[in-house]
Amino acid sequence: MPENDFDAFRKDTLKNVAIEETNSGIFAGKWYPKAGESKYDSISPVDGKHNATVFLATKEQYEEVVRHSQKAFDEWSKIPAPKRGEIIKTIGDELAKKKKDLGALVTLEAGKTTSEGEGEIQEMIDVAYFAAGLSRQLYGLTMASERPDHRLYEQWQPLGPIAVISAFNFPSSVWSWNAMVAAVCGDTVVWKPSTKASLAAVGVMKVISSVLDREGAPQIFSLVASRGSEGGEWISNDPRLKLVSFTGSTKTGRTIYENVARRIGRAILELGGNNCSIVSDRADMKLALKGVAFGALATAGQRCTSTRRVVVHEKIYNEFLAKLKDIYASVKIGNPRSNGVLVGPLIDDGAISTYEKAIAEAVKEGGKLVIGGKRIQVPGLEKGFYVNPAIIEANPGMEITKQETFGPLLYIFKYRTIEEALEIHNAVPQGLSSAIFTTDMREEEYFLSARGSDCGLANVNTSTAGAEIGGAFGGEKETGAGRESGSDSWKLYMRRQTVTINYGRDLPLAQGVRFDV
Image (cartoon, rainbow, N blue to C red):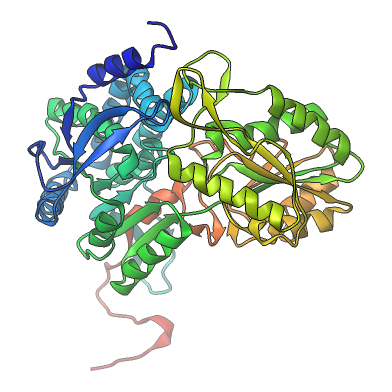
């Protein structure tokens, strides 16, 4: 099939992942009827054309989904954790077989390049295998008791049904960070995908539910597609869902957090990122240029870890900017399936409007537009949502640079000392990902010290984007709360229980307290 025949690609992709003209967006042990009061028409950002229709959940259907998740939890939590891990491993194996088809669905719906679309599915596979190993490592501590003939230790119990609200830019992998890990912990998961990426969720759920059926396991993963704020309100106010993991804007995340806190639930928030790279005069120039360009341009700047600000030492500022401008002028924009294309479309017209408004505001505040910043048309894809990536020379006083703009918009600043660079770096309300490019050990260590980056992710000589699943992912400040994926993030999906066992014949009390009767 020719790479520029996008209509044929759409037809084949939907067929290969069993997506039909109309689809149910509700799964709870079974697929609900492809009908209802509300529906969403998926439009590909690549060519602006219709993909398929997804029917959205009513409140009554949402209630059925949660009840199913509660029932499935009763069964799933009884299965030993290592056995749960084996089942999740099998899901990873099946996703590997479907990697190409599901990756194509991500390209179709979210506009990612072929390698990024398939990379997202590979991330799901990696998390499944990580979780399988984790299922034998849900360790608790043993402590020495101060009382004679006593044993003191902690153990971890499944938390219960949880919910994951995912975003369009990573329509499946971020869900898996939560879902696969929560599953080996013994939890069940209600998934509310972004309305803009419901097809990817439907495709993934079809693959996973078939594996669980084959394994004779309970259907632990449920799907409840809905209008964004509506489903989020249902979930965040539902005390039956013990934890809510939300990925999205800071504004919406704050509402989710307030609702969950009001009912004293748990929340994991992965919100806005306004990520910055520092480029030292001691940097490897070639490496820094590639790292900044990838961070700013990959996924058309629609990653939460995208590089949105770069702070460059004054000695190399002009040279670095000139070379970066050359990269931007030569980068290929267009059909994400085409060879050599690095920048695909933004998700929709609203994203383009936000992008253009941010550029206009930056210029109004005194910024200098160096390159890009305009909507463009790609031959054969005239209805797609494409822009020229922009670079703006900025100064620290510009308020617009403190906001996250979800698109390929990069602000470049000049600095003299590492202290000044970190001051610019940290002077935003977000705190997700950060980077420094330097060959100076002192600068590196200062960047990694308590006086350095205030972000949840700190990178040295690599991009702000492209986190691995083994490390805990998440940010500080307005970026959110909690961590996902690797390290000991599994603890958030379980409840800790401290156990005291008295195997003696007396009842000694702690802290020397006496109670003689």
